[in-house]
Image 1 (cartoon, one colour):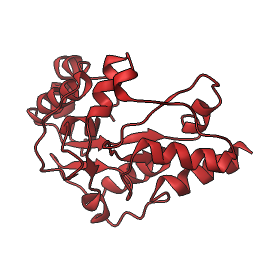
Image 2 (cartoon, one colour):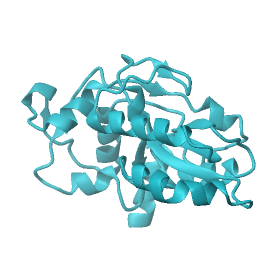
Image 3 (tube, helix red, strand yellow):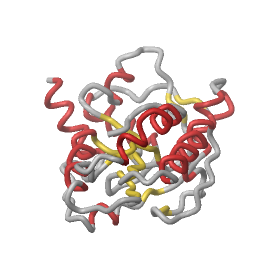
Length: 213
């Protein structure tokens, strides 16, 4: 499993690709990429064969890493992960910060995935994929970040944080992220027989809150 930041693949290819290629027992290698490789599709659906027109620095680096790894003869599978959340990394943590402010970008839609479902998809792929396969790893319900924050606040019975427009925010990388809008299709992973434990953020956040309580 390759889960390193982009550009590290150069070292993997340089130092390990020949050893891995010569291994008679190696049948599966997974690279964890990102749906940021698709860039902005103005809220439309993207599949694994959609145009990759990354607009962020991270997305561009991920796309280049994918291409370099695919150019090897390794039994590679690429997993393009949507926004990851988990018990250790979730909106409830951010809402604890009294100074937290929410960007309200009305036209921005993006997808997410619970870490437990990522693990399930990777396990399924051991028997249900082939070299050079690319999979979107996302749940069933893309939506705005604002919707997720409001739902979390409702669960916590607290007021929603102060909202900022995108123009009010100074962080360049975060602004780039919010300018991308797309709905990531997960139909390919569903074709493997995957049944997500958390098909939407609502089931995921309820489970996390139960564990935090």
